[in-house]
Length: 320
Ligand SMILES: CC(C)(CO)C(=O)C(=O)O
Image 1 (cartoon, protein in one colour):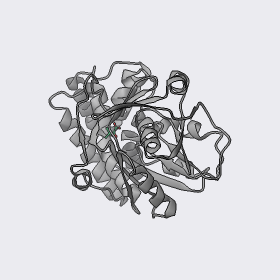
Image 2 (cartoon, rainbow, N blue to C red):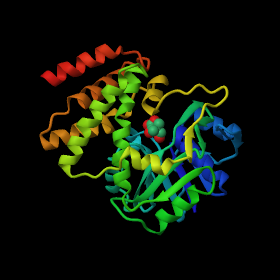
Image 3 (cartoon, helix red, strand yellow):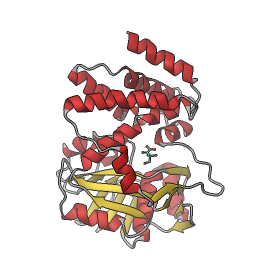
Image 4 (spheres, rainbow, N blue to C red):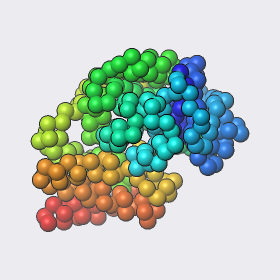
């Protein structure tokens, strides 16, 4: 089996590197300077315990497919459709992404779709280099067939991930885990806008409370932080790495590299969408979605909105 990792950035690069270290056949799909660096020098994976340069084949777009290929999509959710353009629709696709909308989108074109709930704090350092901060395992990955169930391939992927540096768990209810993770990721926009300042957690909690109300009304099940903590146990703690400054979560990193887009439509925006479908107001997530998108478009620095400004916008929206 060959794993083709589409979007070999922080998360995709780490997954590809760990699968390669575990002895699996891997092809990384990357773009621009990152692709050129991987092709020229290999991919460097920095972890709390080592820094290793790995000679992993790379391409900058679709290649002739093999029957045993599995596509792992690790792009941001807003890039999913473009990322899968040109790949044959009979290949299995694993959505190793935040949010809960990718699997549904992909199922329109691909028959065999798998959800992957990814807890893997990582960072794209520079072209050709990724850092994965957790220790002793770089990440915990739950995988299952979409919309539910575990088949032979899901089990095999979980086993293959678990060979080196990752914990892979086959889950019949992977979307329940992904909805739990979505609740966690509602804080990404808060962190990206105001940074880690006293009082930011209260905004995050308001966004989550709003989301839980909407998910409960919709009858959508979600895992709890306690369940996730039990799974993580002693397997993965975030550790400082010498010489590597921790750059924040994925939305923070999108702003830091002025990418021009951010995942907020698929995180806070998912709650806004559900709220609108159910006729439930979601002012906190609405403001977070809108402001995070504005920050990305205007290429503003992460953490540069005063918390008071954000609170005023939320309170203004809540009162409207
Ligand atoms: C929880 C974390 C940091 C790691 O997977 C994440 O999901 C993100 O940054 O989006």
